[in-house]
Amino acid sequence: MEPDRVFIDIRTCDLTLSQVMNEIAKLQSEYPEYEIFMDGDSYAIVGRRRNQR
Image (cartoon, rainbow, N blue to C red):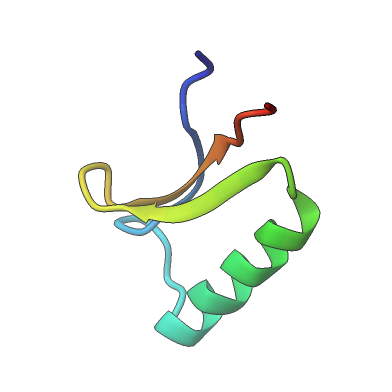
C-alpha cells in the first residue's frame, strides 16, 4: 500500500482556514484518484489513493 501523500503541512504554512479549504477543493479536482483529508496525527492535508475495485 502506498503511503499517504502530504500536500499541505498545517504547522508550517501561513494559510488561513478559508485558503486551506480552497486548496483542498483544488486538490480534489486535480487529484481525483486521491481522497484528500485533514490528518490530525500528522497535522497536515494529505491524500490517500482510492481503492480501485
